[in-house]
Length: 281
Image (cartoon, rainbow, N blue to C red; front, side, top):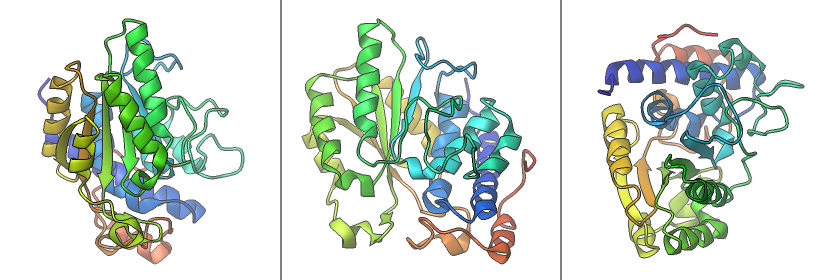
């Protein structure tokens, strides 16, 4: 199916509005990375992923997605709602008492679309690999996708998973890293330099692709390319260059909006930069 880049871009604009309003309403959450990854997540759910909004935990016969950097939950919740997993109006309950939309995704609230709790960084790749191997054992030829933060790659468990996946030829897995160069304590280069991620992942035996994560056409192109490289003996890693806070000028080029909520004036400013395309909740 030919992607409608304009429609996907408009959906991403609405998702960014959702993110800002959700975080503002409870004065808590992580807008920076959520805004930066909006194009990835919209392209994934509205173009690439073969999924069923009639949710079941097993996910047999459909693609699966696992969010490892669970702090960007407002993005995921917005996309799930806009895709039809639950009512868009429920976004207004983000981080409220007894909500299903917890600050980090969890499973005991039975929110459709969530298959594993996440937010303890470094664990999501192990889960995704397990799900990919289960699909192989079940003769299920659908794919598994996972998303990670670049600061998360400082966790040792990631590299254990990387070795395991290549050794066991987990070639139905497409992982991505949000390479925005920022984490909660500052630039990644200052906190703990990551060096060449391409060189590292290739050395660990993965097929490595690169993506301009805030260019919807390139996101779609690289997703399609990644799918063409599955089932050829190697897991796939997409290095996705993004701008934290993308779409809102005063949130870009800094780590300060990793986990900070806008005030009323800042929210109005931010929303003024983003087109309302699907209707605010």
